[in-house]
Image (cartoon, helix red, strand yellow):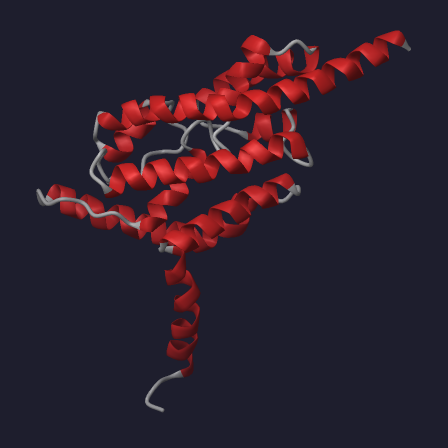
Length: 225
């Protein structure tokens, strides 16, 4: 009564959409994106129609506040950006560097050399298909686990004023750490980037050792045949 069918549909659809801009909603969506990638589905393409309008609106609101000389506010949807801060989707920069420097198997050593430049520019497809991450439970665990830690770091730093809130929707392929600075216009974001990189390396390292040994054993078996 007193409402049209289109407005009723809009109201119904708005409820789950608005839930994405909450801490539980942002965590759930981002984890689902990573899980889908592990299962061979392009998770970003599935959820971008849902998250992009909310993210762009949050950036626009903060940019307006910043331009007016007022303090930007924290939007939970910004936490989804933590999914790709360090080397593209899944935060794979540390994985690539460790493979480049530490891998004993030819497969991961060559992979590290081929993937380092794209990783710096936050392009993770060479990692997803080359390591690979898809259908790989060994690398799938840190792929998802570090994201949740990364998200917690971003939430704490933005929410408690350790670093500035996001105000600019910078191009996703701007190399690190310039991307982190441009998003917040805060040099402290670069320091947080260094901290997250160190944490990600500690998380990736034991899983890479296990996977590298597996690849090396397979290469030795092939040579023996």
